Length: 137
Image (tube, rainbow, N blue to C red; front, side, top):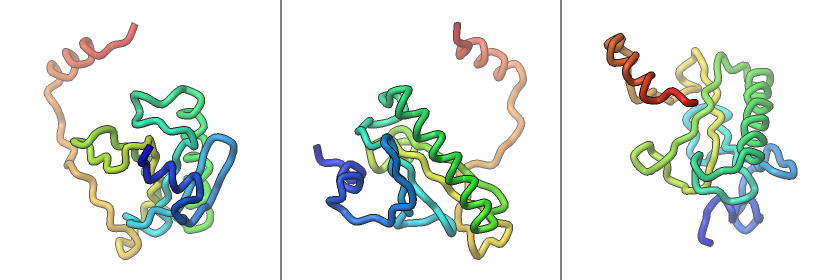
């Protein structure tokens, strides 16, 4: 398997590790969107959100929460984005499930992230119809 994040977890590629437990590994992003931008990965390889098993997904989410608290406390982040991209059209560039922990700051000199859309109100009928199509159970 030729996976960048698997190689990082194995120690074959250096990283700035900030947290590790039995199931997860977290490290500093080398192309940070803001001060303190981290990546959390499961140690077991899963390509994306559709493939990851429940145990690893839960572990990544809990590690992400711990690190969101950490960047808030230590760096004084004014907010935090937890971001996962699934698929090439959603900007996934490393095909190993991962969660970005991106601290957000009112001081834009510390924060370069720009969201790719401007929220606008949708059509209520279209929203209800889509909700009906996507309802589980």
